[in-house]
Amino acid sequence: MAASAPQTLAFTITGPIGRADLLGLYRRICALLRDARPDVVLADVRGVQTDAVTVEALARLQLAAHRHGCRVWLRSASPELVELCAFMGLADVLAECATPETPAAARTAGTASGYPGRT
Image (cartoon, rainbow, N blue to C red):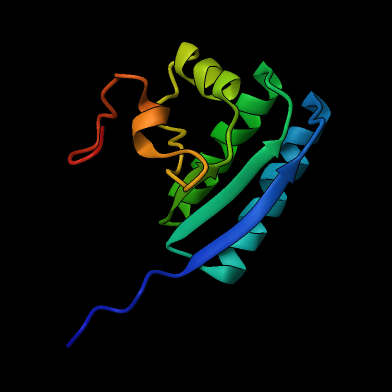
């Protein structure tokens, strides 16, 4: 019997994101994950600002996903956002999804991912 394809939920996160928005965002994503029950979440972050509040919002998104048994992959993250996540110690928590626009070789910039089979 073949395994079924993973359920994927894709959405776009736009900004700016304020500190006061964090709790509401977390609650909305938890409700969305509870209803959709995805295995993988693809979050397009091309329109967000590169700042600590955005990284905190993304970390909370990953926490919510983990609590609902799935994983978040960031799509179209700017190099600056990827660098800030790494600087804040969240490079392995907030993984960037390799896309045709951002191939895996370009996004890793010579650093190991921490996930077997990934660079």
